[in-house]
Amino acid sequence: MIKEESRFNNSTVFEGMTSIRAILDCLKENKPNTRKIIEILYDIDKEKSKSKELGYLRKMSDIYSFQVRGTSFEEIDHYSIGASHGGIIALCGEKQYDELTSDKIKENGFYVMLEGIEDPYNFGYALRSIYASGADGIILSKRNWLSAAGVVCRSSAGASERLDAFIACDDFIKHFKSKGYQIVCADIKNSVSVYESNLKKPIFLIVGGEKRGISSSVLSQADQIVRIEYGRDFSAALSAASASTILAFEVFKQNK
Image 1 (cartoon, helix red, strand yellow):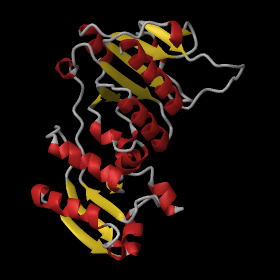
Image 2 (spheres, helix red, strand yellow):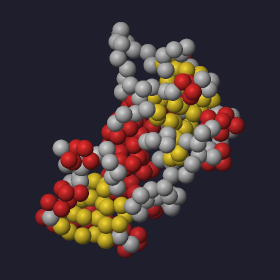
Image 3 (cartoon, helix red, strand yellow):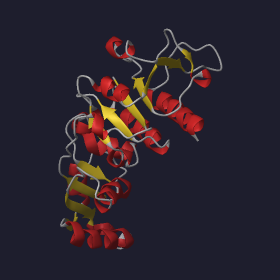
């Protein structure tokens, strides 16, 4: 129960090679604000079966100055939240996120904001699809799930570390409008079908969570409100991850 509750607390423990590789790739690309790896722990009983991964990590440790240490399964289990780490975890530092300003927004780009998502796993699944669709970055509300960085990284398959991310300032929509961006919100009232909408770049897409949705102050500034049409009568909302996937890939399709 303690470990289940801890997934919602600050977490800078990254579990498994997919998450760790994402951080290392960001370091190799000199991406700004990449988090620091402090120490990598591996299950000493898996040293032989994980020899390829450990060889790579030791090589990277010489370049980026972190320790690679064999230890017991019990210590790894103590630090980890999930059970899919494969016997390798990384203890990392915090990551700093810059506040959004107009000069950080790319010309003719595609950015996404996820508002009101209740669960870090759902947030991570959404980021996975957003990254795969080719989005240029994610805009974060001041309260967001990247405090649970290890959980989000694992559920996003590393996308949360790879995506450019900025904290929304009070007038963040004005910054996008000043760069010629269309503001598109996903909602029902006064909406058009996403399949009949114009999602050409530059576009700033805002998707709300299943329960709270998008705030009225944000909706009032939308240039276009779109809805996802269903194949049958069904009153429930899609998960934010599912909705993000459909919408982000429709943007990809229309701009391909």
